[in-house]
Image 1: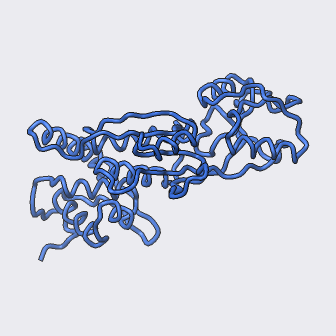
Image 2 (image 1 turned 90 degrees about the horizontal axis):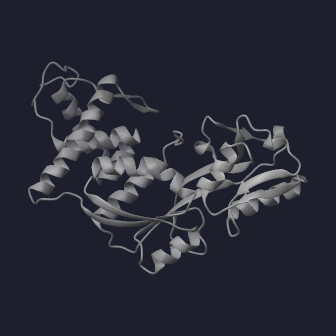
Image 3 (image 1 turned 135 degrees about the vertical axis):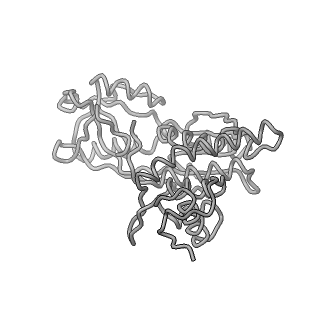
Length: 299
């Protein structure tokens, strides 16, 4: 009998794409349970695949405890190769007339939810390089109206706008934020860079200021997060941001600074009625995996 932990003994010297897909799923979710759900397999099957892969490469890939799963140094090294091999496999099959997951996805995002899109698209492209995207940036209600009209396939928004069936894929605390070197937070009235009418988070922020008795003025009012970010980074105004998107050039402002507490922000995922195509199913799995991770998403 082969001792699983005797890595000097190997059954096979070839890397199997199926094993690598399972390895990547565990590495990305840091959970055998979530990886199994993503792969539509039972957890024991995924665990067995990882054992087989560890026997092939002759190294332990994960350190597992009752509370956590993390990559070893060998696992981190293999992950770099795994992404490249899976991508090459998809491209080779496509060139030979046997495509893997391919097709087109019509995706709509609101301006705030778009801030969470970079890690989603990066991970998706690593696994499914043949899928073509058409991405629209719309207000939440516009995106959901477009979904109802079958003009898009997936919507990633911050407000339900009366539509049911959305899945909350991420919830974060909102914070007041200002440029690290700015004195805007000390001005009276407070200069704000904030979204336009119709945004529930704008309404919550202004209501909190009114309740606290803090005087304010709308210095920069725009539907574009990029415009608001520019005003804040140049030190001209204060804004509100989800916690994970407050980068090193900004600082949080709390009750100790005279700012009232804000509500949490929800990122909601909506998709067209079933049956969904393979690319859409793959994208929704990646969105769920990436946005559910606790790690900061700010660049």
